[in-house]
Image 1 (spheres, rainbow, N blue to C red):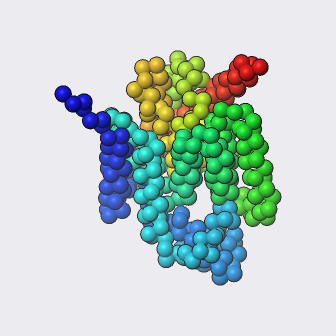
Image 2: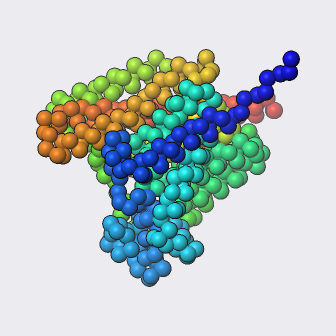
Image 3: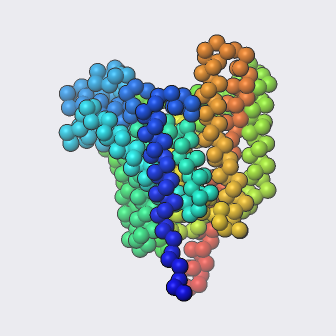
Amino acid sequence: MPAAAPRCAWRWPALTAGAVLLAFAALLLDERLWSALGVLPLQPHFSDWLAILAAADAQQAGADVYATPNPFDPFGRPHVYGPWWLWLGKLGFTVADHRWMGALLAGVFIATAATVLAPRTWRQAALAVALLLSPPVLLGLERANNDLVVFLLLAATAWLVARFPRQGVWAATGMVWLAAALKIYPAAALAALPSATRQRGPALAALTGGVAACALVAWWYQADYARVLALAPREISVFTYGFKVLAHLVQNIPALKWPLVLGLGAGLALGGIALIPRWRALWTTVPLRGGTAFAFVAGASCWVFCYFVNSNFSYRAVLLLLPARLWLHQLSDPGHAPVARRWLALTLLLLWTACATAHLGEWVGHGRAALQPLWLVVIGFEQALTLMVTVALLLALIGWALRLNQSRRSATTGTA
């Protein structure tokens, strides 16, 4: 009897991408579906990409792109990103191109994210669809936010590391440098460069070169970045995740009273129950090297950095898709499955709690004051879950770094 043909490795990623693309198309065709998922759409769609093109138009017209209002943007927004985005105008793109460019960016992101998650079974595919259709990710897609571009660059870097194990570290350095020049915070992904090579020398050289290149860009465009940092929003609101958001909520507990305490306590308790019994396993869960290791460390490092500088807007949850690849695959590994299940459960709960937060906030804003205590409970719960997910990623990063250093020392001792 002939051997059975191997199953197509692309079947489940393709089905995942197809399901998400169909759902996204349905959302664009029926505005009511956005509200059902707790996503506040703007008109026109892909408005964040429109803002970038509007800034490029302003520069081409000789206007100050950092001034408010920008007459080329329907919302009057100034440019709040690095100056390299303005090259889109020099290449001939205008605000008239925002629809097809936004749709293309969303489609490429969905296909790439499904490939990164690479589900292998129907259960993993269902979890991948739940991750990609979560309200924060959908918000990034609806706005065509340029965090999607950062995700694409980091995903491409992880592929290069996996595909070219010897030369990949230099390509990775260049890609991370480009991402950092575009949005600053991806500089945190430089921490993942040691996963791209087995040799200490090239790893240190790449890390040093990457830091120097980022510093050079920051120095060269220091006037632009100073204005960007002054304009960049660091809001403390229900639409942001961050250490300062949590600190602000805790400081205001006397005014907000028991609902917020209840929500924070419930989230911390649930996160503690999920993570404390398995915290040691988090130290050994990340591979030392390779594309999956790079994806995990890059995504987790950027998320943790943004959390502590309080610039984690909800759509920045796309960064969590990079570590999710590892957790999703470890569901099939008996040794790692308990940790993977717990982390994925916490992440999905965090991402979908945003739906309840948005709905309750809308109802309270429409005069249903009786729901405000429940709204505060959900806000506290969501912020506590964000903290626990961040702590889990931080523990995994620390364990990875310590084990990587130990392996390099062992290799050096063995060579000696």
